[in-house]
Length: 334
Image 1 (cartoon, rainbow, N blue to C red):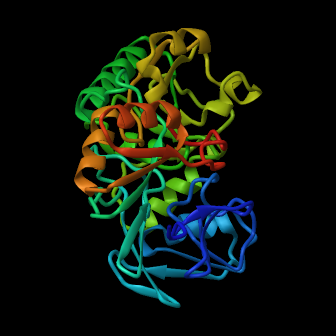
Image 2 (image 1 turned 30 degrees about the vertical axis):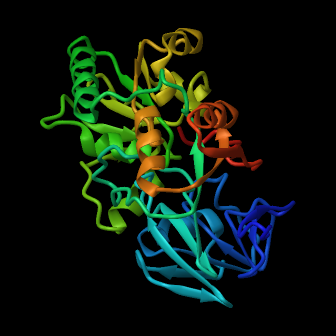
């Protein structure tokens, strides 16, 4: 039996034939990165390769002195006898699936991905392969995403109602990807200005620098101390909830935009006034459709509901098994 083309090691997913790692969790000589979230892009490796679209985000994550090589979508690279190419994952700006081919065998490591439309990044591209390494963050039938336009309209109406009552609207979302996607989706005209937390603002500028159109925003940190946020929408990371930073907003209305809001109890337990179901990960129908689209004979599942997905696929006659990784531990994206 031939050795796996990609297999886990203590440093991360490793391709021995090409001598490189994919999204390693420890420093390595050659790291191929699917996207800029902290659990996939970690500093300290000698050299990196990633999609050109996400250069600014990757620089911010890895540090300005990192040796970063950028590639275009579909461009072929050679690592010894192994051919590698990057294909859009639709997850966040610059996110990629990594296609690895050696001696006629094709593997695809998907990183994180989604099938829903997102104007802030290139859409997911199905890539035919023999073995597909897929995330399983929301791999249960209950996780089905409503149309983004519907969610954005709900947020807009909620913001409008809060503004009419002089209450600051604070929407918590993950800083990289989700925040920018929300801004792009909100219909105009807006009830008031948009303010950003310090964790969101620089990443938003990276999106603008990459040519992504977003509405005007202001940094909370640059507002006067007596600023009236009564008609404002403030976008902040979940870590800001309950912090002293929140004291500047009077009677804020609190919402959270996340796939986890699909479970009503999550909103109640976290104390949000509103929960909005929107995720940058693939939902259950999209996950099954993607597996079918790849035509893969072997499915390897990582993080989230990996075991449940393996069981479901196995019952339908597919060769599936979990792949142990450290992805999904950063708590940054959903």
